[in-house]
Image (cartoon, rainbow over all chains, first blue to last red; front, side, top):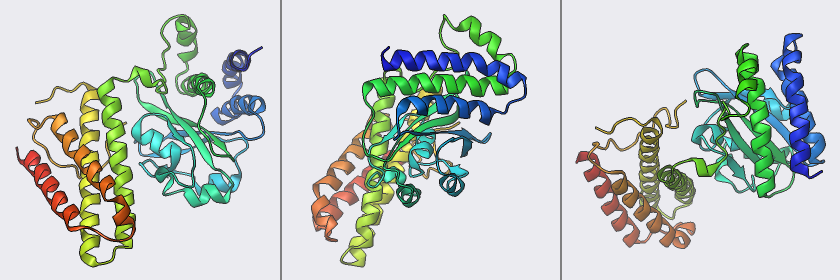
Length: 266
Length: 66
């Protein structure tokens, strides 16, 4: 059986067991750990998965499950404030889209957590936000690797599938009536809309996000150049450029929010 | 949750400033930074960079005041 079909079958088997597990009092962490172990057993030796849950105020991520990620890594990265440099998960929650860090050593998004990841031997990380039925982000699902690299198309499809099942488990734990509704809707549009499908997002948003991201990246570079500028005047020019870059990025994010919320522009 | 930073310190554009105008300034800034990337890596900032940056800042301020 092809990998995708095998994964789908395994996850559906796992998903069908989750309601009974919740009913007998298992915690969300227990259920999610079993989900992730199913994935890791199929993924090989270089797959370390984790689920981070977003705090109610939407500002911080904390571990929901991470069955094989070293405890020292989890302790040191517990309660991550989301942001553009907060690793793949912090950035995925911040930007509201998947973040595939191909090389943690050089990816600006890992600014706040690079050393921690490298110390534990992690070199790449693919993180995808999870949204609830109201389109709000409730957490992130990530795969860490000890090698650099980006996901293949098949792997992205697998991530979508995994994230859907993880999202189901989270929603089941939070809404007791969710399971019955979910089953009746299985054949229709999924209740949880995953954000990993780039094609779902309107083109202007994709374009603006990419531009804002690039501006943030340039700002980091400019700050770095400023720190070794040949004169204070040169450093000030570079810091000014970084500041302008960040302000423009923030303005673009605001525009994106307007588009996403479909707020009328006065 | 919001995709906007808590304190974005964004340019307080009047809503009459179109997204495309903001994009245009942003793209010009990126082009400028990339054009002088090599020199800046060595800690050097050519006068032309400072001049063009100043123009871009003025453009951004005009958008904010529009």
